Amino acid sequence: MEIEHIYARNRQEKEHSLSNPRNIESLGNKVLLEKRINIRASDYRFSDKVKYYVGFENSRKQKKEGTKIKELTTLAENALDFTETDIVQRNAKIIFGFVEYMHINGLL
Image (tube, rainbow, N blue to C red):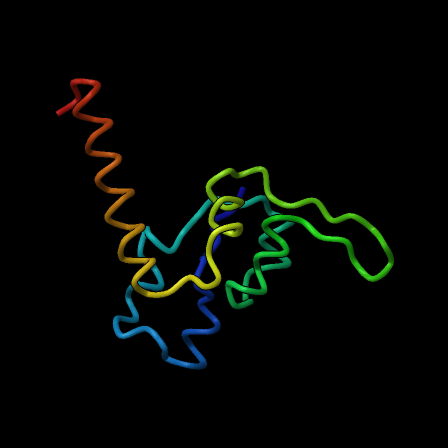
């Protein structure tokens, strides 16, 4: 497993499209992803990464398997883009979920 940026770092470097460039390294923009998929999808726009997340058939009719990570397949099936707002919201959701887990398990 490797860490993947959902919003491509290369895109931010070229377009400067995030109002807060630090969001590129935010927890909300990172996801664990199989190395074989990460290598192919790393610098693409989200809409182009989707095919690597869900799987596809290439021009030689070879089936390329998608990720086994449910969160990514759900995201790819339900979102057309992954924006800065999505990064911020996902970051808050991850942190809230972690704190809730800690609370439920008596760790706070």
